[in-house]
Image (cartoon, rainbow, N blue to C red):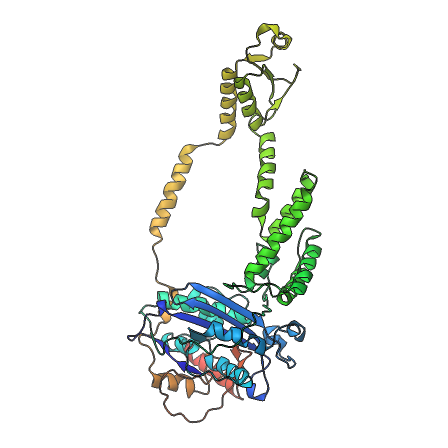
Length: 527
């Protein structure tokens, strides 16, 4: 099915302008020829310069019982309502077509895709492929070539949602983008160019799995949404599943917060509804907008209702939908706690000057009185003169009486004092800015740490074969893996091999491997 190419330090095509389709499969077992089937597909389409173009993922109903849930956490209940591979076969080809298909141990994905499409009577010859396991071994001299180890080495981060099809595809895409962009020597693509694949009917049916849920700082729903595929053209949610998802969402938010068990149930409902990142966000925003409409039905959003909306908005990552309500509430709080808090003013007259000063006073926390009382601090005389009895009463009580201009200046002076605070010091900000600039100037870009593992020269096909194909006690892996090398192979004696677990990792090889691996590791450490 795949015609292997390679990323080489030799002359070739600049990979930054090519499109890659990063593929990962989760499966019910190891051997497609013994009846193992695909139970999840994840694809990330990305340009070689790191720009992600599209994503796709779905659970797949394999039609057989899943007995290896411990490897990928996909249960029989999870795939009960998922589409079959026949349902998604056309969509998978559409996402793989016109791209170089990338897998970490691509032979594994090839065997299962060949088997699945073979059942449908479809043959897929000549698809350009790149195995990143071969790529990593060829260019990097470091123990451990599993996906998570290579990803951590190159990106500096451990992948999220490991052993999920989309999570592994994303990790692989991010790793290859970094490798291409930051390699000590330019890498070029040497192999076939992308080709269109046969067009099969597309259903658009998806059941994406939100794997590896964590509460994090943004909440459970934020993680759930992030784990769903970011599809360029998402299919509409399925009505029955969407109805259940919204009902669960209302139930979970009734107490103002979502807990782990509720998030897990929402993830199941999201898969059955066929939600993607885009459609999930749309559903969450519509849900909050409806709640706001109910709160505004009587014309007043109470403080209790606002708190409910705020808690829900935080969980739904949709605070922008109630931003105006929060701003109004914040403005009220700011006014009541402004620098003129405690001031009670009495305006006398209704001229424009008086009105303007009163507005300024209220915006900064002052209260407006109607009559002269002992709590009044300032009377603003707008030209009423001594004829107004309130002026005479205020004068007799010793209350300050000022013109609008005088009152404005007095209030501005008071506001400036409050704004300064007890420890205001403009020179401190200047010192902080200078120190920050010095620190930034001293932090010059450093050479990525993973460059120290860059081989002086890439392995030749013969060297690769001798080191990674012929060896039975491969100390850098948990098993011996036979890999298709993207060039003519040197004949090798038959070896006993094992295949990886559920499209993610290799399984335990024949007896003596652990002992041999430990001995070799000890030898390397001693050396």
